[in-house]
Amino acid sequence: MICFEGGTFEVDAATIADGLEVDASSLLQHMREGTLTSRCERGIDGDEGRYRLTFSTARRRLRLVVDEAGNVLQRSMINFGEPPPPRPRGRHRR
Image 1 (cartoon, helix red, strand yellow):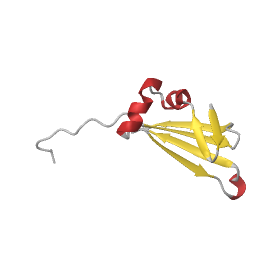
Image 2 (cartoon, one colour; image 1 turned 90 degrees about the vertical axis):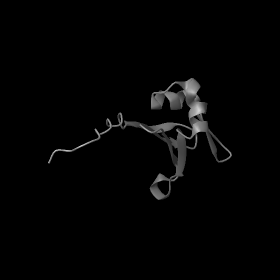
Image 3 (cartoon, helix red, strand yellow; image 1 turned 30 degrees about the horizontal axis):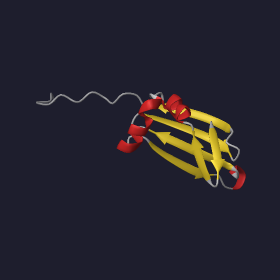
């Protein structure tokens, strides 16, 4: 659920957790640690009245395009995958 009031969006934690594929109970901890960030962008010209809400972790990004009534017009999630394994140390073959 998404509410827009007084120029501020309020997004239900379950919506974010589901979109990022994380546990809803851990969202606040992720925010405190800075491992979950958010961004809000307001549309201009042909996108007037639309907003892009982006929620990111180190490996996933959830993007919601919403209108002023809080209706989700578009939803996308990118999973960047797991980090590559560390390179072995030592001599390298030539």
